[in-house]
Image 1 (cartoon, rainbow, N blue to C red):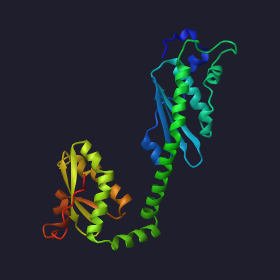
Image 2 (image 1 turned 45 degrees about the vertical axis):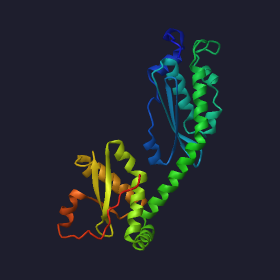
Image 3 (image 1 turned 90 degrees about the vertical axis):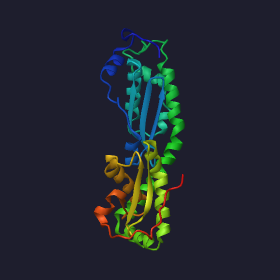
Image 4 (image 1 turned 180 degrees about the vertical axis):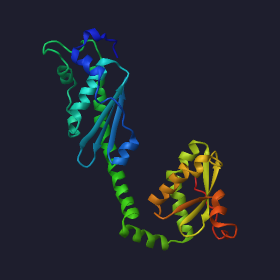
Length: 271
């Protein structure tokens, strides 16, 4: 980005740069929770975030962040304001030169110096965002479909009845296989990234699966709190809504020492 003195930019640029409306960030988890597609990208010191309703192709929210000074700030804030509530195709039709015109104090005096590179950088960033949308839309629509299925099978009487019948028809080995596949896909990598892991010891009964934490997870305080809840949530959403996870060290507290678990084979998700 070119180094531009504030004295040679328009008063509108200065005013927006002092108090931008749309500075901030939007995280993927926020978009996922709302069933929205998040298209974001970075060019030089400017990053733009846009959430889109993938079914309507309508922009829901926009944010930006930059360390690039008043010009990037004013351009990005103006763009974000223009995009609010618009069809996503409007993004691709954005003329960055028109944004500069809007930032002029008088029609015949440019808002920014002709030597500045921010307009070209913003144009590149907009194209990146446009190019990324089809893939992000497909991912968001697939996630919405999955969420609807989960909601049906976990929160409705009809869905739970269907899930109960399907679960009852499975053998212990089939149940353990589904559990292992789910943990391998949705949990195992996150544990390994922190130096931990887990092992499936078996089914204690129809709805309780026993696990053994390994590595950094063994003895970690989170293993009996947030990590355990996360594992249960993944199993309930993706395998069977009524599953509970029992760590090995909690076995005695829940079941005493008289429970015979010898019929349940030890199972570890495959790498």
